[in-house]
Image (cartoon, rainbow, N blue to C red; front, side, top):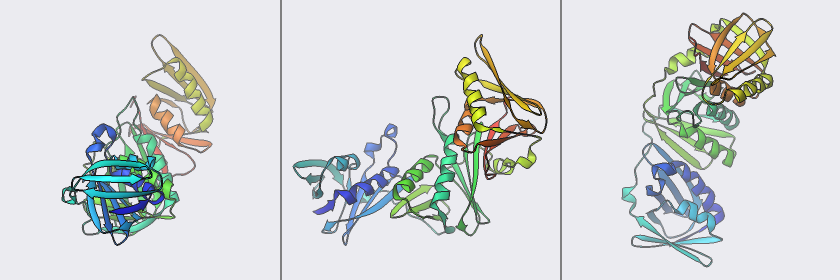
Length: 360
Protein backbone atom coordinates (compact mmCIF):
# COMPACT_ATOMS: atom_id res chain seq x y z
CA UNK A 1 0.00 0.00 0.00
CA UNK A 2 1.18 3.54 -0.72
CA UNK A 3 -0.24 7.06 -0.54
CA UNK A 4 0.26 9.97 -2.97
CA UNK A 5 -0.99 13.54 -2.80
CA UNK A 6 -3.24 14.32 -5.75
CA UNK A 7 -1.50 17.67 -6.29
CA UNK A 8 1.76 15.79 -7.01
CA UNK A 9 0.26 12.77 -8.78
CA UNK A 10 -2.01 14.53 -11.30
CA UNK A 11 0.77 16.53 -13.08
CA UNK A 12 2.91 13.39 -13.34
CA UNK A 13 0.05 11.42 -14.89
CA UNK A 14 -0.56 14.27 -17.33
CA UNK A 15 3.02 13.77 -18.54
CA UNK A 16 2.42 10.03 -18.86
CA UNK A 17 -0.57 10.73 -21.12
CA UNK A 18 1.92 11.60 -23.87
CA UNK A 19 2.98 7.96 -24.06
CA UNK A 20 -0.53 6.57 -24.45
CA UNK A 21 -1.79 5.85 -27.98
CA UNK A 22 -4.50 8.16 -29.27
CA UNK A 23 -8.03 7.19 -28.28
CA UNK A 24 -8.79 6.11 -31.84
CA UNK A 25 -5.91 3.62 -31.53
CA UNK A 26 -7.32 1.99 -28.40
CA UNK A 27 -5.31 3.80 -25.73
CA UNK A 28 -7.26 2.13 -22.90
CA UNK A 29 -5.46 -1.13 -23.66
CA UNK A 30 -2.08 0.46 -22.88
CA UNK A 31 -1.15 0.04 -19.18
CA UNK A 32 0.55 2.56 -16.88
CA UNK A 33 3.59 1.53 -14.86
CA UNK A 34 3.63 2.58 -11.19
CA UNK A 35 6.99 1.81 -9.59
CA UNK A 36 7.61 3.02 -6.00
CA UNK A 37 11.20 3.00 -4.78
CA UNK A 38 12.42 4.78 -1.62
CA UNK A 39 9.64 7.32 -1.54
CA UNK A 40 9.74 8.18 -5.26
CA UNK A 41 6.91 6.92 -7.47
CA UNK A 42 7.92 6.46 -11.10
CA UNK A 43 5.02 6.64 -13.55
CA UNK A 44 5.47 5.57 -17.15
CA UNK A 45 3.40 4.63 -20.18
CA UNK A 46 3.95 4.02 -23.83
CA UNK A 47 4.95 1.63 -26.53
CA UNK A 48 8.22 0.97 -28.27
CA UNK A 49 7.40 3.93 -30.55
CA UNK A 50 6.70 6.62 -27.93
CA UNK A 51 7.30 6.49 -24.18
CA UNK A 52 6.74 9.07 -21.41
CA UNK A 53 7.59 9.02 -17.73
CA UNK A 54 7.59 11.27 -14.65
CA UNK A 55 7.99 10.98 -10.89
CA UNK A 56 6.00 11.98 -7.81
CA UNK A 57 6.79 11.66 -4.08
CA UNK A 58 4.86 8.91 -2.27
CA UNK A 59 4.71 7.25 1.14
CA UNK A 60 4.64 3.49 1.56
CA UNK A 61 6.45 0.24 0.94
CA UNK A 62 8.30 -0.34 -2.32
CA UNK A 63 5.99 -1.79 -4.99
CA UNK A 64 5.64 -2.18 -8.75
CA UNK A 65 2.43 -2.70 -10.70
CA UNK A 66 0.93 -2.23 -14.16
CA UNK A 67 -2.50 -0.63 -13.96
CA UNK A 68 -5.19 0.13 -16.52
CA UNK A 69 -4.73 3.50 -18.26
CA UNK A 70 -8.08 4.69 -16.90
CA UNK A 71 -6.07 5.78 -13.86
CA UNK A 72 -4.90 8.85 -15.84
CA UNK A 73 -8.44 10.26 -16.00
CA UNK A 74 -9.75 8.87 -12.70
CA UNK A 75 -7.19 10.67 -10.54
CA UNK A 76 -8.36 14.07 -11.84
CA UNK A 77 -11.80 13.42 -10.29
CA UNK A 78 -10.55 12.38 -6.85
CA UNK A 79 -9.88 14.71 -3.92
CA UNK A 80 -7.10 14.81 -1.32
CA UNK A 81 -4.48 12.09 -0.68
CA UNK A 82 -5.00 8.94 -2.76
CA UNK A 83 -4.32 5.51 -1.28
CA UNK A 84 -3.33 2.65 -3.62
CA UNK A 85 -3.64 -0.94 -2.43
CA UNK A 86 -3.14 -4.06 -4.53
CA UNK A 87 -4.92 -7.38 -4.06
CA UNK A 88 -3.72 -9.85 -6.68
CA UNK A 89 -5.09 -8.57 -10.05
CA UNK A 90 -6.97 -5.58 -8.64
CA UNK A 91 -5.57 -2.17 -7.64
CA UNK A 92 -7.89 -0.19 -5.36
CA UNK A 93 -7.81 3.62 -5.29
CA UNK A 94 -9.31 5.20 -2.18
CA UNK A 95 -9.72 8.94 -1.62
CA UNK A 96 -12.26 10.56 0.70
CA UNK A 97 -15.48 8.62 0.27
CA UNK A 98 -14.49 7.26 -3.16
CA UNK A 99 -13.24 3.74 -3.77
CA UNK A 100 -12.44 2.45 -7.26
CA UNK A 101 -11.03 -0.87 -8.46
CA UNK A 102 -8.82 -1.12 -11.55
CA UNK A 103 -7.33 -4.15 -13.24
CA UNK A 104 -3.59 -4.55 -12.70
CA UNK A 105 -0.86 -7.02 -13.65
CA UNK A 106 2.83 -7.81 -13.29
CA UNK A 107 5.42 -5.29 -14.50
CA UNK A 108 7.04 -8.01 -16.60
CA UNK A 109 4.55 -7.22 -19.35
CA UNK A 110 5.81 -3.64 -19.68
CA UNK A 111 7.92 -2.86 -22.82
CA UNK A 112 11.49 -1.85 -22.03
CA UNK A 113 12.31 1.22 -24.12
CA UNK A 114 15.72 2.34 -22.88
CA UNK A 115 18.40 4.41 -24.56
CA UNK A 116 21.40 2.65 -26.07
CA UNK A 117 24.88 4.07 -26.64
CA UNK A 118 24.71 7.86 -26.81
CA UNK A 119 25.46 9.42 -30.18
CA UNK A 120 24.65 13.05 -29.33
CA UNK A 121 23.95 14.80 -26.03
CA UNK A 122 23.22 18.45 -25.29
CA UNK A 123 20.51 21.02 -24.66
CA UNK A 124 18.37 23.67 -26.37
CA UNK A 125 16.69 26.77 -24.89
CA UNK A 126 13.08 25.86 -24.19
CA UNK A 127 11.67 29.15 -25.55
CA UNK A 128 13.46 28.73 -28.91
CA UNK A 129 12.52 25.06 -29.11
CA UNK A 130 8.80 25.52 -28.48
CA UNK A 131 8.69 28.41 -30.99
CA UNK A 132 10.27 26.16 -33.62
CA UNK A 133 7.88 23.30 -32.83
CA UNK A 134 4.88 25.63 -33.13
CA UNK A 135 6.15 26.77 -36.53
CA UNK A 136 5.95 23.16 -37.73
CA UNK A 137 2.31 22.68 -36.75
CA UNK A 138 0.91 24.39 -39.86
CA UNK A 139 2.66 21.79 -42.00
CA UNK A 140 1.69 18.71 -39.96
CA UNK A 141 -1.75 19.66 -38.64
CA UNK A 142 -4.42 17.08 -39.43
CA UNK A 143 -7.46 18.54 -41.20
CA UNK A 144 -10.43 17.21 -43.10
CA UNK A 145 -8.56 17.96 -46.33
CA UNK A 146 -5.28 16.16 -45.70
CA UNK A 147 -3.88 13.37 -43.52
CA UNK A 148 -1.47 13.99 -40.67
CA UNK A 149 2.16 14.04 -41.70
CA UNK A 150 4.11 10.87 -41.07
CA UNK A 151 7.28 12.28 -39.60
CA UNK A 152 9.49 15.16 -38.51
CA UNK A 153 13.17 15.40 -39.34
CA UNK A 154 15.53 16.42 -36.52
CA UNK A 155 18.93 17.26 -38.04
CA UNK A 156 21.87 18.22 -35.82
CA UNK A 157 24.82 19.76 -37.65
CA UNK A 158 27.38 22.41 -36.65
CA UNK A 159 25.53 23.28 -33.42
CA UNK A 160 22.36 23.99 -35.41
CA UNK A 161 19.15 21.96 -35.09
CA UNK A 162 17.12 21.93 -38.31
CA UNK A 163 13.52 20.73 -38.09
CA UNK A 164 11.60 19.74 -41.23
CA UNK A 165 7.97 18.60 -41.29
CA UNK A 166 5.22 18.18 -43.86
CA UNK A 167 4.51 16.25 -47.00
CA UNK A 168 4.98 16.57 -50.74
CA UNK A 169 2.71 19.64 -50.88
CA UNK A 170 3.87 21.68 -47.87
CA UNK A 171 7.12 21.62 -45.95
CA UNK A 172 8.08 23.73 -42.96
CA UNK A 173 11.81 24.24 -42.31
CA UNK A 174 13.10 25.94 -39.16
CA UNK A 175 16.59 26.26 -37.67
CA UNK A 176 17.66 27.04 -34.10
CA UNK A 177 21.09 27.11 -32.38
CA UNK A 178 21.68 24.29 -29.89
CA UNK A 179 24.36 23.27 -27.44
CA UNK A 180 24.94 19.92 -29.14
CA UNK A 181 28.17 18.75 -30.76
CA UNK A 182 28.12 16.29 -33.65
CA UNK A 183 25.98 15.41 -36.64
CA UNK A 184 22.88 13.22 -36.83
CA UNK A 185 19.57 12.89 -38.71
CA UNK A 186 16.56 11.36 -36.93
CA UNK A 187 12.99 11.14 -38.22
CA UNK A 188 10.44 11.00 -35.38
CA UNK A 189 6.63 10.59 -35.39
CA UNK A 190 4.72 13.83 -36.00
CA UNK A 191 2.89 13.40 -32.69
CA UNK A 192 6.15 14.16 -30.85
CA UNK A 193 5.73 17.84 -31.82
CA UNK A 194 2.37 18.35 -30.09
CA UNK A 195 3.40 16.35 -27.01
CA UNK A 196 6.63 18.31 -26.57
CA UNK A 197 4.77 21.61 -26.89
CA UNK A 198 2.31 20.50 -24.21
CA UNK A 199 5.02 19.31 -21.81
CA UNK A 200 7.21 22.39 -22.25
CA UNK A 201 4.36 24.85 -21.79
CA UNK A 202 3.20 22.98 -18.68
CA UNK A 203 6.62 22.78 -17.00
CA UNK A 204 8.04 26.11 -18.28
CA UNK A 205 11.71 25.00 -18.11
CA UNK A 206 14.70 27.05 -19.27
CA UNK A 207 16.46 24.24 -21.13
CA UNK A 208 15.46 20.97 -22.82
CA UNK A 209 18.04 18.18 -22.54
CA UNK A 210 18.33 15.96 -25.62
CA UNK A 211 20.06 12.60 -25.99
CA UNK A 212 20.12 10.49 -29.16
CA UNK A 213 21.21 6.98 -29.94
CA UNK A 214 20.89 5.02 -33.16
CA UNK A 215 17.20 4.16 -32.72
CA UNK A 216 15.65 6.78 -30.42
CA UNK A 217 15.74 10.36 -29.14
CA UNK A 218 15.15 11.31 -25.50
CA UNK A 219 13.84 14.72 -24.44
CA UNK A 220 14.02 15.73 -20.75
CA UNK A 221 11.60 18.50 -19.76
CA UNK A 222 12.23 19.30 -16.09
CA UNK A 223 11.25 16.01 -14.33
CA UNK A 224 9.44 14.62 -17.37
CA UNK A 225 11.05 12.34 -19.95
CA UNK A 226 9.77 11.65 -23.47
CA UNK A 227 11.50 8.96 -25.54
CA UNK A 228 10.62 8.54 -29.21
CA UNK A 229 11.81 5.77 -31.49
CA UNK A 230 13.07 6.66 -34.94
CA UNK A 231 10.54 5.93 -37.70
CA UNK A 232 10.98 5.20 -41.37
CA UNK A 233 11.08 8.42 -43.35
CA UNK A 234 7.95 9.15 -45.39
CA UNK A 235 8.18 9.94 -49.10
CA UNK A 236 9.86 13.30 -48.54
CA UNK A 237 13.28 14.34 -49.83
CA UNK A 238 14.47 15.92 -46.57
CA UNK A 239 17.92 16.86 -47.85
CA UNK A 240 16.47 18.63 -50.89
CA UNK A 241 14.00 20.51 -48.69
CA UNK A 242 16.78 21.84 -46.46
CA UNK A 243 18.84 22.86 -49.48
CA UNK A 244 15.90 24.69 -51.12
CA UNK A 245 14.99 26.65 -47.98
CA UNK A 246 16.83 29.78 -49.11
CA UNK A 247 15.73 32.85 -51.05
CA UNK A 248 19.02 32.74 -52.94
CA UNK A 249 17.53 30.16 -55.31
CA UNK A 250 14.38 32.19 -56.06
CA UNK A 251 14.06 33.71 -59.53
CA UNK A 252 11.46 36.25 -58.36
CA UNK A 253 10.77 37.74 -54.92
CA UNK A 254 7.54 39.35 -53.74
CA UNK A 255 7.29 41.47 -50.57
CA UNK A 256 3.91 42.43 -49.12
CA UNK A 257 1.78 42.83 -46.01
CA UNK A 258 0.90 39.46 -44.48
CA UNK A 259 -2.42 40.75 -43.12
CA UNK A 260 -3.45 42.22 -46.49
CA UNK A 261 -2.61 39.01 -48.33
CA UNK A 262 -4.43 36.87 -45.76
CA UNK A 263 -7.59 39.02 -45.95
CA UNK A 264 -7.51 39.03 -49.75
CA UNK A 265 -7.12 35.24 -49.80
CA UNK A 266 -10.03 34.84 -47.38
CA UNK A 267 -12.25 37.06 -49.55
CA UNK A 268 -11.62 35.20 -52.80
CA UNK A 269 -12.04 31.86 -51.04
CA UNK A 270 -15.54 32.87 -49.92
CA UNK A 271 -16.70 32.65 -53.52
CA UNK A 272 -14.83 29.53 -54.57
CA UNK A 273 -15.23 27.36 -51.50
CA UNK A 274 -13.86 23.89 -50.93
CA UNK A 275 -10.80 22.24 -52.38
CA UNK A 276 -9.01 24.22 -55.07
CA UNK A 277 -6.20 26.44 -56.15
CA UNK A 278 -5.48 30.14 -56.15
CA UNK A 279 -3.52 31.97 -58.85
CA UNK A 280 -1.02 34.65 -57.84
CA UNK A 281 -0.31 36.99 -60.75
CA UNK A 282 2.44 39.45 -59.86
CA UNK A 283 4.11 42.48 -61.43
CA UNK A 284 6.43 45.23 -60.16
CA UNK A 285 3.96 47.03 -57.85
CA UNK A 286 0.98 44.75 -57.32
CA UNK A 287 -0.26 41.22 -56.77
CA UNK A 288 -3.54 39.85 -58.09
CA UNK A 289 -5.25 36.81 -56.57
CA UNK A 290 -7.70 34.82 -58.67
CA UNK A 291 -9.73 31.75 -57.84
CA UNK A 292 -12.63 29.90 -59.42
CA UNK A 293 -15.29 27.42 -58.36
CA UNK A 294 -18.29 25.82 -60.02
CA UNK A 295 -19.59 28.63 -62.19
CA UNK A 296 -18.14 31.24 -59.82
CA UNK A 297 -14.93 33.20 -59.54
CA UNK A 298 -13.26 36.03 -57.67
CA UNK A 299 -10.17 38.19 -57.78
CA UNK A 300 -8.49 40.65 -55.46
CA UNK A 301 -5.61 43.08 -55.94
CA UNK A 302 -3.15 44.35 -53.34
CA UNK A 303 0.13 46.30 -53.34
CA UNK A 304 3.33 44.25 -53.47
CA UNK A 305 6.94 44.80 -54.43
CA UNK A 306 8.21 42.29 -56.96
CA UNK A 307 11.57 41.66 -58.60
CA UNK A 308 9.86 40.36 -61.73
CA UNK A 309 6.52 39.38 -63.20
CA UNK A 310 4.69 36.14 -63.74
CA UNK A 311 1.97 33.90 -62.34
CA UNK A 312 1.97 30.84 -60.08
CA UNK A 313 -0.75 28.51 -58.84
CA UNK A 314 -0.87 27.31 -55.23
CA UNK A 315 -3.32 25.24 -53.23
CA UNK A 316 -5.46 27.58 -51.16
CA UNK A 317 -5.13 25.73 -47.87
CA UNK A 318 -1.34 25.57 -48.30
CA UNK A 319 -1.01 29.33 -48.51
CA UNK A 320 -3.64 29.97 -45.83
CA UNK A 321 -1.88 27.74 -43.28
CA UNK A 322 1.50 29.37 -43.90
CA UNK A 323 0.11 32.91 -43.57
CA UNK A 324 -1.70 32.10 -40.34
CA UNK A 325 1.41 30.58 -38.80
CA UNK A 326 3.73 33.47 -39.67
CA UNK A 327 3.35 36.33 -37.21
CA UNK A 328 5.39 39.00 -38.96
CA UNK A 329 3.69 42.08 -40.49
CA UNK A 330 5.65 41.74 -43.74
CA UNK A 331 6.35 38.53 -45.62
CA UNK A 332 8.49 37.57 -48.59
CA UNK A 333 7.51 35.02 -51.21
CA UNK A 334 10.28 33.57 -53.34
CA UNK A 335 9.32 31.86 -56.60
CA UNK A 336 11.60 29.02 -57.74
CA UNK A 337 9.80 27.63 -60.78
CA UNK A 338 12.70 25.34 -61.73
CA UNK A 339 12.35 23.51 -58.40
CA UNK A 340 8.55 23.71 -58.51
CA UNK A 341 7.96 25.53 -55.25
CA UNK A 342 7.29 28.89 -53.61
CA UNK A 343 9.15 29.83 -50.44
CA UNK A 344 7.22 31.87 -47.85
CA UNK A 345 8.95 33.48 -44.89
CA UNK A 346 8.65 36.34 -42.42
CA UNK A 347 11.39 38.47 -40.90
CA UNK A 348 13.31 35.42 -39.62
CA UNK A 349 15.25 33.90 -42.55
CA UNK A 350 15.60 30.57 -40.72
CA UNK A 351 11.81 29.90 -40.63
CA UNK A 352 10.35 29.10 -44.05
CA UNK A 353 7.49 27.25 -45.70
CA UNK A 354 7.96 25.49 -49.04
CA UNK A 355 4.72 25.32 -51.04
CA UNK A 356 4.40 23.20 -54.17
CA UNK A 357 3.59 25.08 -57.38
CA UNK A 358 0.57 23.47 -59.02
CA UNK A 359 1.49 24.90 -62.45
CA UNK A 360 5.16 23.85 -62.39
